[in-house]
Length: 401
Image 1: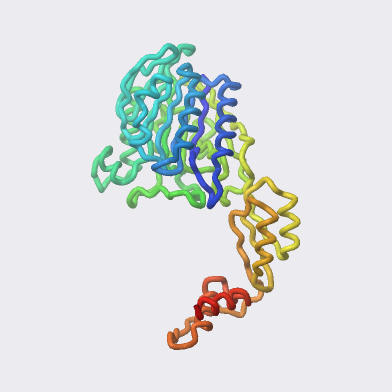
Image 2 (image 1 turned 30 degrees about the vertical axis):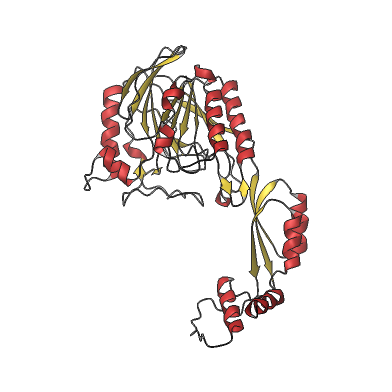
């Protein structure tokens, strides 16, 4: 059985003033092509399907069209769960219609998917947080324990309100009970979740810049050691870089987002994961690099001329540009920089020679002339950098208006 694992699509994502929709259309098409070329039997999408609770029409249309193409109009099952950026009710809403196309949408933890049968596969068993699929072209069933993201309120609703029990223990007990009941060695056994999971004792995994951190009350992060022994592969979502926090024998994998969505991801290659699995054997997997999407680049220059030269030579990317200089950037210099490239997300000026001391505490005399107050305030907000003559003249014009 061949399974494709992807996650963290964040459809509808904007990067400051830049829409990423055109890039997302291309990378969704690439994922569909990989699924078809690899003759994938089952697709897993592990949460953060959209970037916010109320996605725009174009993002929703792209989502449904992509899932329909991945499902081959009902020939190949696609299972998608909600993440911390998704509205569980919004994800659940089209599920009855989606099933007719071979798509199973799961918004809430411990959801029960009613068994149904299509021409090419069926949901043969179902329980809270669990489904079993039988595929027409496979002799053995595939079992999936599924845990969409749950905030603290939903956790209490679905897993109880025992404040003495840590989340790790709650999930461990729930997963073990399900695995013991349904996951014998006569089928392929998977876990699919949108959680902040790590190996105990390992370095803390950094969440991407701009990502809503997963914090469920004061609970600790989830340890990979609580995954039931029957599980052969764990498909995770939330962190945007590819990594296996499990073992080679029993992978626990963040497959990565399909695009770089913050400058903390600059330089990352993005992937989908292809898993080959059969009952009672170790799975094998490979990561396939995605080629679409603009590069995110962080660059630092010490002159306007050098920065403009580089910007002109590197047009097709999104940039965080830091410019170190001895004086404040002039308006015409800013204009020249922005005219040189249409992908500058952030322009960060830094003054090298600073006589200003950031932590200096001064008593503010509100009766003094406003201009010195403005200059001091400007310095406090700009790393000690004083306003240039244009800004001072503009301030004087406003003051005398």
